[in-house]
Image (tube, rainbow, N blue to C red; front, side, top):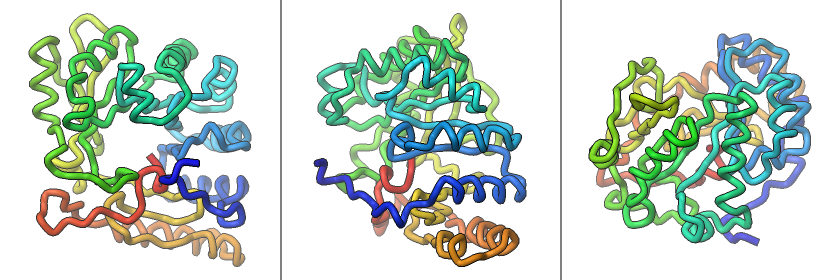
Length: 298
């Protein structure tokens, strides 16, 4: 068993009905986009039922984030039919041996790339492929990731290394800035800047002769905290308005104590107003949050 993984007792996890109820309440507050993350959401035994329920609610966009280890054409087709719009796949390297070292997974790189192509072909697009870039680990691959985006017609997103790693070994010196990544890629590829939405977390570019795109998420060096409009509800009902703040509150007790929808709506609104002004990763006194990304939800 991976020592970095801590399993939550089943009774502390939200039920399928609780997820669906929260989705309805979020929609009633004007939320139009829903993300299903993890851990690994494809391991959730009621994923198809969840997708069918929220898929019928009329959200503008429903997306799922996965490591790509359990994707088949049958899965992808059923998810799309249920209402899933697109999928994001986490892939931090294009080198087979390096992938094994980074992920400690038995899924091969060939299988993950095949899953990405399957998702694209089924129409769960744009398929986004996320890579966290770490100095001395995979920063030598940034231009290769750009070529991958062109070849596979996906949205490749290169993410600055954030202080959410399971080993809690984050150091500012290991961060490769989005500016540095962009400059490296432009030495080998021509990029055309796109106009991004105000709330976009990524700075996006396209290629002259490919449907693929490349995006940079500069979480550390060019924080987008001021435009952040996201709210996370974790599997155990913890509501967390900011990745980098340990401020969080449980909505599970309200769900299970008979609270009506209005009380739950007020709870989510109050949590949204409690967002931090910024993460402070560039400050000398910055302290990483206690929970890692796998626990919070990617």
